[in-house]
Amino acid sequence: MDIFEEINVKGFVEEDIDPTLDLFVEIEKLKKQKNAVILAHYYQDGDIQDIADYIGDSLGLSQQAAKTDADIIVFAGVHFMAETAKILSPGKKVLLPDVKAGCSLADSCPPHLFRKFKEQYPDHLVITYVNCTAELKALSDIVCTSSNAVQIVESLPKDQKIIFGPDKNLGAWVAKKTGRDLVLWNGACMVHEIFSREKITRLKERHPGVKLLAHPECEEVILEMSDYIGSTTGILKYATNSPDKEFIVATESGILHQMQKDNPDKTFIPAPPNNNCACNDCPHMKRNTLEKLYLCLKNELPEVTVSEHIIKDAVKPIERMLEISANLGL
Ligand code: 13P
Ligand code: SF4
Image (tube, helix red, strand yellow):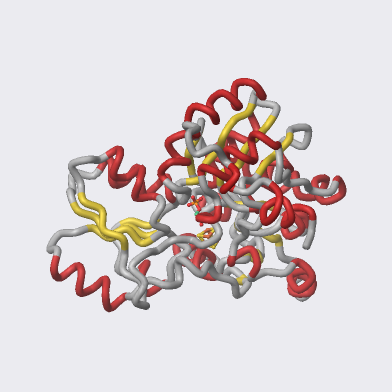
């Protein structure tokens, strides 16, 4: 058992928290005392989203991590997101409420195998989706997120050969949108590959006029029947600005909290998965709880660190993404 595992498993356990404490009040106090900021992804529990200083998609969260003047960043998300924050703000302490909050997509692309894959295409530029390890980012030329992947590919000359990894679904969607022939790594997200085309079709029949909103990590069969495809922020904005009242949402269920909060008069139906489970939860994102968030801020552990030599190579492709995005007003 490593040190972080020990801290999560044996050290500061949720059961030790005084049950009379109002964790919302305590977290606010700690945040002020320590000059900390809480950045949360839309897939976090509603309570965490409600106490966060900033909620957003991966691009928005990276932009916040790069510009914050807080001393401590509590990243309510998964490991690769906290790593990205550390790479962008190496002088700050970056905390992750549960250090085991990983990502099946990041796991689907081990850096030593990707290095070999990359060697087969020496004249290709490497674009990696931000959902990957810091080591993988260090092997890349440009990082992208779901909200800027199309624009980043389009910003490159038409004859530029490109490897895109690790998400094959996002990569195939970008290839289709841009008309580019991308070499794809065969990775995927366990949450976004679970939706059932048949069940969504039946649901659409029962709800005439309902709009299907999907994340580009979904499989092509789902994307081709969607009315809108975009990042979590894109999905939220689309639903808010749309005159329609009913939506099927094909992404992780955490986004529904903000969609419902911003649009109390609209109905959001989670897209049905191809199994008997009624939820589309990411088991990694959902490892974080309000209790763990309180404990990590109080004890300043678990901390996410990235070695200096990885930061040196990984920061360039992330900064390149932020630069391109800023130039495009994203
Ligand atoms: P975005 O919030 O950038 O759309 O990313 C979705 C995701 O899978 C994060 O893990
Ligand atoms: Fe990774 Fe998928 Fe969970 Fe996002 S939803 S953190 S891509 S496993």
